[in-house]
Amino acid sequence: MKKLVIYTSQTGFTKKYAEWISARLNADVLTIQEAKNMKMDFYDEYDAIIYGGWTMAGSVVGSKWFLKNASDWKDKRLVLFCVGASPEANPDVEVSLSKLLTDEQRTYIKVFYCQGGLDYSRMKTPSKLAMKLLASTLSKKKDADQKEKDMAEMISHSYDISDEKYILPIVQYIEEAM
Ligand SMILES: Cc1cc2nc3c(=O)[nH]c(=O)nc-3n(C[C@H](O)[C@H](O)[C@H](O)COP(=O)(O)O)c2cc1C
Image (cartoon, rainbow, N blue to C red):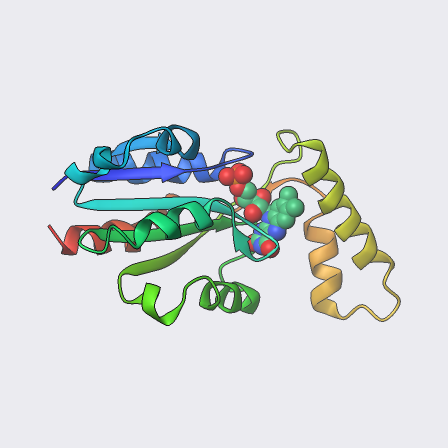
């Protein structure tokens, strides 16, 4: 069974997950830019395609491209994994995940979440500004609840809550099909 991991990553967390998954599954890896340059028949030889993107304001970067192509790959095992700065237990994660796919897409694509983190040292300026603005807005909010105060504190600096264990359900899902 041939497997392919495609990813997009700004600060390295999604790249790290893509590499962990490909090492575990012995899968080929492409960035989304490389994948976009491939002719569509390149994908014919793959039995499983795993797409990973980072979470931006609840959506997954690059998922539009993946979902468009996935409708032609229904005969393959398909995974969409997203990497975000929110801890897995944050209820917002479940809400965002539930909105990523239509009911029809859910019949042939499985979604997973992997905890990433924030790395201000590798973030591009617009992203850095957006995060700093969010942190400052939350910290200045007069009627902020505890959840918002905790979030303001958390996103005011870089942190890494990634862990290789988050790939295990993805690996299992792909291996079930082998
Ligand atoms: C503008 C912006 C919006 C973001 N929105 C979310 C979000 O809605 N949920 C979340 O969990 N993380 C969010 N993040 C955090 C990133 O998803 C997180 O840093 C991720 O680990 C980045 O992955 P990468 O290192 O592969 O780029 C956001 C980051 C930026 C810069």
